[in-house]
Length: 431
Image (cartoon, rainbow, N blue to C red):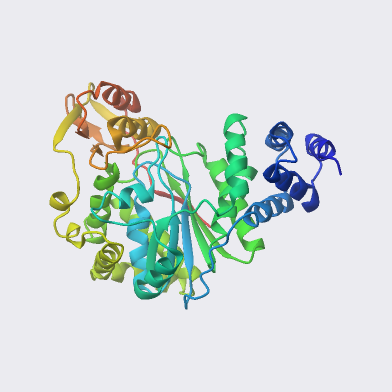
């Protein structure tokens, strides 16, 4: 079939066959199909969406466009996790040591941050000496030895997705749920695991701004995963405020360590325990057993010790566990952003908090930007908290002299009213 006929079918709300999607995507990869035709098809998908079968087909085609990560050498149950991205999300640093202590193998490929959201690789690289560029052999050996390893994503996984995403970015078709689901799952399914737990963020700091879209995305990805033979679970979690208090690379490592010590923020602890429990459940534990196991692993100090082993095994300084503020790069200059009103925190525009952190140097506006691992911010007031005039809302950890724009964003992010506001839950729904 001609490419123009494939486009017109989707434009008219009809289904494309596997062969039609294959011809379109692979033609784009080899240069025989021009970008303007793929752009037209993406816009047709944006308005008419993909059926369940089309989502599965598109995922498989993008998955098969590149290398797969073969983990068959690693014995045991391998469960992966994925977050759709947020502000203050340091959960992988907490969860992977926990599940590794329970005997689940956690071999994770993670990315860097861009825009208002942080990246796991950036957080880990704030640890002196820590290496995220691992050979495949080293990566597998570390998982065999310790039960976990985290490395940077390889460009050879799902190259079709990377090329199509670049086109979506410039054609205003990024925020279509079918395309988001296929994009994420094409990369997650490239890793040889038995199951995947998804952390789908929703709210002002997330890609999905409302609960209905987040739930639809979660169910779409679960459907794709199950049709590709994976055990699947999803947690829809709150991103209407930053997760925890710390935002910024080394600061988030410190908060992850605090959580493993049992003294982390309640929302971080709760969400980490829920996702860890779901990973154990997919790995064969009963629901009740998985919750009990996670609690005991953290409270006994086993997860903290596993984190220390993980850091040392990948070249990092293990003394960060005992002396985080001495051994990690943390900016010495602290600026307090004070409230201009009294009342209760009604809303927080979390994206603005993330952008403020980026302006301080903790994130990237462009992929080539160099980040400062020592800077960031600490959020002291969350939704539902009482605030007095001139009370500190946020502390900035800075190296730059100019922090005016970051300060403006933080004041813009907070909505404070006289009416008492309910505190928000970190876990919204579990699938």
